[in-house]
Image (cartoon, rainbow, N blue to C red; front, side):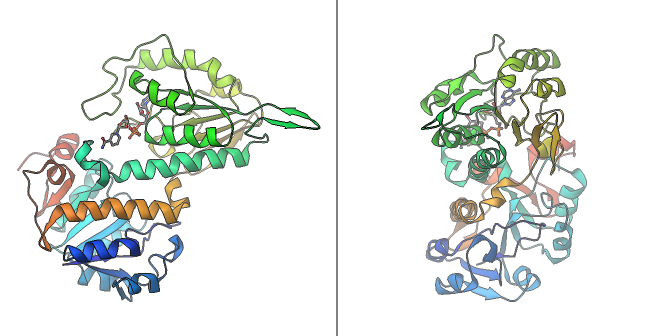
Length: 386
Ligand code: NAD
């Protein structure tokens, strides 16, 4: 079978779905790789590096789609809402597609995708089980964005991060607050600590306290308790407005004392909760920085504008999206390993085997045979079952 890798077409996207080092592993399982010329260049992987490992370089996107049995992408149509639609005409009924598809983004797009007949697998739907961990692309990308969020904040902050003892006196360390200590948040804590900041973190799931502390962060305890904070999949559960209001009230002081606030709190399929209000921003010192990793989902800060940096009362609020794409070499490497593990799981003796008894395959399968196959997505969009 041929695994095809088109060049990412989303504007500014620099990642690539497969890197040369995974080609040998795929070949052992009977999978050949065909890549669009130039697809890896921006991530630091030239055509020659793929060819050297046995990959076939094809001249254009159409050639990749027409050759491939399985097309792998980072941002497929769905998550690529700018240029992704052009791929619909290239998809075939007997083809599989794997990548970020934003399965709970738009009902129309999911149905349009289903209409092509393609068997599409959305990596966002990967179950959070130990068995699926090595295929979990969301965690890989969250690691990259948590890391980069800290570098962006440190670049913008008019202060040093570490404590410095110099002949001209002592510099106090920056105070960083991370709200939401999931995968991205924990990586942000670790990165800020490596740069010498004093780090605090808050999460509504009390279970993360130890993880925060093990990274050298202080866990902020608020005298409120979330109801059923965590679902069976390890995700935070949405809370009622009274909880969020009380949370904002209590977080106000901690936010005001921070030079940098990094927010990562998301609840799957829902608008991100507002945790930092305009009033809380007014309480921050000029020059402070907020990096809102939930910007794409409406933001955890009331003032965040997706894809923009705004300055209000001297406070910088950064709503950049797709930060993983700014570390394209390693983000692609992690993603390629996730995809390779998934491809090895999906194929037997070089053939695609869609075994619906397997939870990893069943949960990630978004569309198949002209229908929306995912029960979770059908339920979310109220699409009647077949
Ligand atoms: P996420 O991206 O869904 O959310 C980020 C964090 O924000 C979470 O920790 C969440 O609890 C927090 N949050 C949500 N609403 C909040 C609020 N109102 N106030 C404060 N915090 C809020 O989460 P994630 O990074 O994907 O990880 C969540 C958990 O799932 C972690 O424990 C992680 O280790 C686990 N996980 C397990 C697997 C696996 O076993 N395969 C894979 C991925 C993640």
